[in-house]
Structure formats: structure tokens, C-alpha cells
Image (cartoon, rainbow over all chains, first blue to last red; front, top):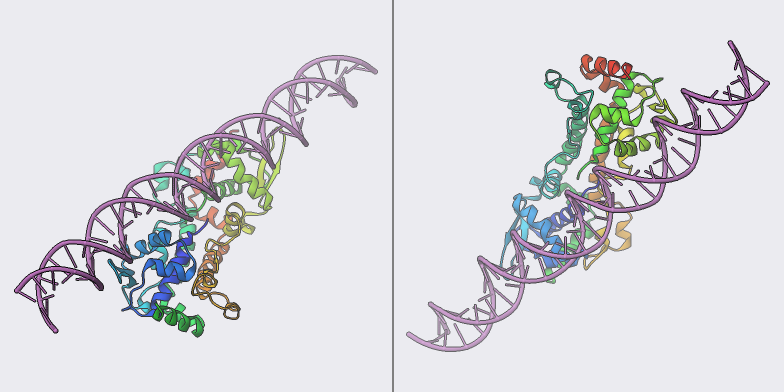
Length: 156
Length: 156
DNA sequence: GACCGATTACTCGGATATGTCGTGTCCGAGTTCTACCGG
DNA sequence: CCGGTAGAACTCGGACACGACATATCCGAGTAATCGGTC
């Protein structure tokens, strides 16, 4: 079970955009340069965030991305779902209905106990992610990191 | 983020082995037939469970797998870790240290706030998984399923 | 000097190759059961 | 009839192909700033 690297990139970009300010616009190329990432691929993740309504995009010269909402209103769960997709990590393929030991249909009215347990665990994970917002990350990070990011943007 | 299908297979096999009894031995081929799975590949997952000390394997005719411990002492987390591997889904690649906006080493003494948040979420997931045991799943499942499994094993 | 228009350069956005890991399959080492042979 | 032994069949275990998804890249459509020309 491996999470896409784009999630880490997307989160760092959201935090940086939060520090820079919701009204300022930063291009993919510039964000990629800041973190030493491949620009064309980072663009893919930022697109996903834009589609999810987390980022707002503008084209043309002086175009780029900005936060579509205040950082306090963006949860980590939203970012993860936007990039990873919303489907659960554990997918019950209902093998209890297959093979020699196949369960009769009546027995399968109730969801599989295994699937329920796995779903509960993922729910706990998602709940924890939904408690944390981009704003909280901005607060927890060192003040120097925020200041450096703002300076870096000003020297564009 | 997608979990290996082997996790579902391994969990179902553990529950079935729990119902059948810790002293009874069932071969990979038979378990595969019960769930309609490819035997050779299922064997791979069962091997992983054996390496982790969850299952005990025996070779030769009348050989196969059995639970190495009472079902109440096997958590879902152990099964998931045995098959999926223990490394976290989110892996921080420390991109804050790269590119134009690279953070100085002193600033990186503390772990990345993003990585911490993601780690906390995964911890909640793992904690929830460690609360559930194979025995609990056995209890939650329909009694008819347990009985059918026992009968199926007896008619070997 | 101010306004308008064409041009240009830069942006996002999606369609296109490549690498890695999960999926699936195969064959070999080891062990136990069985059948046969000898006592 | 009983014990020992050789054989055979069945098991796990790990090494070997295939396919799907994440990774990485490229090019095109669109837009806004800019430069030049005209009023």
C-alpha cells in the first residue's frame, strides 16, 4: 500500500500558497523550482487540486495557481482525496460468494465482517485527516520557513 | 493508494482456519478452491503470514497451514503488515530541503509538519486495526458461515 | 498623448511514453504416506 | 504376521513472466500582457 508522491507535493504547495497569500498567483514552474520537482508532472497534481476546487487556476502570462479558499477551510483529507482518488484502499471483492464455500445470497445481506472492520479503520484515518487543515500545518511549521517562502515569492 | 488483494484473501483464510480449529491443517489448494482463488498466488500470501508467525506450515501429504496462535491473539494489523509490509503509505521525501526554497539543516531538526500529520492519521488507522482480532471477526460473521466452513472441512 | 488592434510569449490542460510494483505462474526441495519385500 | 525400506505423491517455498498503475514528458489551446500603429 503506497501513497502517490503527488500527495506530498500537493500538500507542500498548498502550505506555500497559504503563506504567500490567497490573492497571489504562482506558476507551476516556479513551485516546481522551489521544491526541486519535475514541473510538468507537478502540474498534473495541481490540476487535480484545481478540479477539486482547492486551487484556482488562471492562464496566460502572470497566470498560475492560488488557494481557492482560506487555508483554515482546506483539510488534508480533501487534498489526499483530490490527488489519490476517493475510493477506499481496501476493496472487498466478495470472495465469500465464490468457490466451493460460496455463501448463499441470503447470508450476504449483511456486509462482510472483514470489509466492515477495514472500512472502520479507514474511517478513523480519514477522520484524523479531516481534522487537520492547511492552516494548522502553516502554524506548526517553523516561522522561518514561512518567512523564507514569502521572501522567495517577493523576489520573483 | 491501493491495498493488495492478498490482504483480503489472507484475512478470509485466517477466519476460516479459526473456525476449522487451530489443530486442523488445510492446504493452499483447498483454501483456494473454497474461495475461488488462484492457488499458486494465494500460496504467496500464506507464505508471508507463515513468515510473520501468524500461520504455521507443514509439508508433505496431509500438510498445509493452520493458525499458529489462538484467533483472539491475532490482530488485523498483524495480518495487514505481514502481507503489505510495514512501511507507511505516506513517505516523506523531505522535499523541503530541495530546490530554490531549500530549508537550512537547522530548520529540519524537527520533523516536517506535513509528515507528522500524515503519520498521526496512519497511527489512528493502525490503532483501529490492532483493536480488531480474528476472533472478533469470527464472532461478527453469521453463524451459518462458520458452520458451513466446518462442514466443508469435514467433507475433505 | 491616448486608444485600439495584432502579435507574442507565457500559462494551464490533456494526450502520450516509460518504470516500477502488484499479479499470476511455474518448477524444485523436502517430507510424509504408502506399498512392497524380506524376515 | 510384522518390521524395514524404497518409492511415489503431495506439500510448501522461492524463482520467473505478465499486466496495470504511478511516474515522467511532451505538445496544443487559450489568455493576458505588450508593442506598434493610428487617431
